[in-house]
Length: 566
Image 1 (cartoon, rainbow, N blue to C red):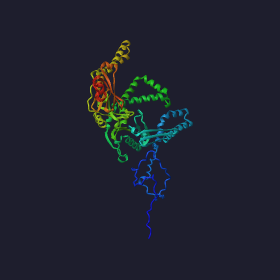
Image 2 (cartoon, rainbow, N blue to C red):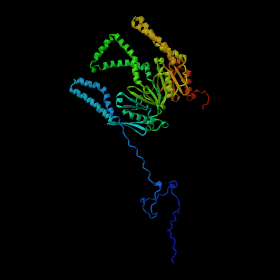
Image 3 (cartoon, helix red, strand yellow):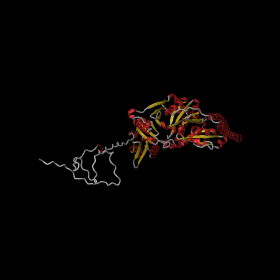
Image 4 (cartoon, rainbow, N blue to C red):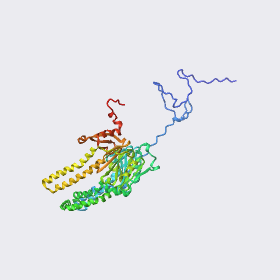
């Protein structure tokens, strides 16, 4: 018979220890430590899997106690360089600036072996300089910015946030096109008429890749589309200008002066570089004096230049505007043009605030106009903002209505006093010159004054239709979405601007305008030229038009005295 076993019991716990209770440990149920509570002393943690006197084998670690995964390492940054083919272009571009020094070295050295050596050293120096420029220039897209670096003795880093990019200009001059290269210019609007950065010598494929990446990342988040590699750029052509419309080129006054510009450049070259070119500056001066003594030859040269104006002007116009194409691509307006230098300019649609329609006197008779975009933050807008070359007026209004937005209101006429001012300014100066010439011819009897008198009278007579046309060109209007102002005759310009682009109004009145009861109303716009003027409007129009376009701005100033403001 055995004795009954007694139940085994642990020694009693101290009175100060609380009674144990069963609980489940979770991160959410962990009690917060009491304020001013003593912090228990923590010893070294036992090794995993080791036995302890109290608990025996170590329990398995809970899932939440697993160490967090290490963050992914950022991809290695890859510095990109321009194409090595650009080394074939840079020395050639430097040769014009080295031409005079090299010719001078050869002439001074008497075309000796030593002079040829110095000339060769100069050419080698240009090649070395081009190689150094290529090696020390890199670029890369890092996150949300583009960085360009140039480092030789000192390091220069330019950082361009992608969200600040307003346009990308890709051009292919002749030498670049032969080598399959392009020039990519980036515009942010922060550097005036200059581009913010230029990558001169990237491959065509790299230029298209950078253009797509930069334009897509600079767009607003809701406008971004899937990756270019997956879907490709979404394009929709708006207009491809037919080549037969290039015949309108001679109507543009800027291109008509090309023969005179070429002749003037040749004369300046002869007088400036005559000695270096081998025939001497004195010989050029003697030839000029001989032509001056034979005025009929000068007249023949002038007539030849005049006859050449439409042909040379039309040729230059065709070279610059060959296959002009306007299309929409992923929220951008893209204009491509050019025969020798193919150029592609991208304008962010959200930054386009309107357009400016321009025509000269001859263009107006032919019914053709040119169009430029009014864009916020665009440098060199007269070149880069061109939307259309010379096209028929109806086509221009259709294209601008689709690309930017239509204007659906008639222009309002200005008061008759504005017509009198246009006539006075077009006729009075020539009439005054005719009066002075008549007095001088009567007093001296010189034939020259009689010639001046006849010319002044002719110009004064031509001023009458010119003044009437200038008055007919005046106008302003508002269709509820866009406002328009128009003025000019020899160069008539109509600016159509969105109402949201107006940032202020300015009233300007000269002493003569005060006496006539008219003023000039300027709509301040944060794009394009910064302001567009409605010339010689009446004082009533100068108050009513801003109140119609931006009533919330002027309402506090137009309330009746004593009326409480809301």
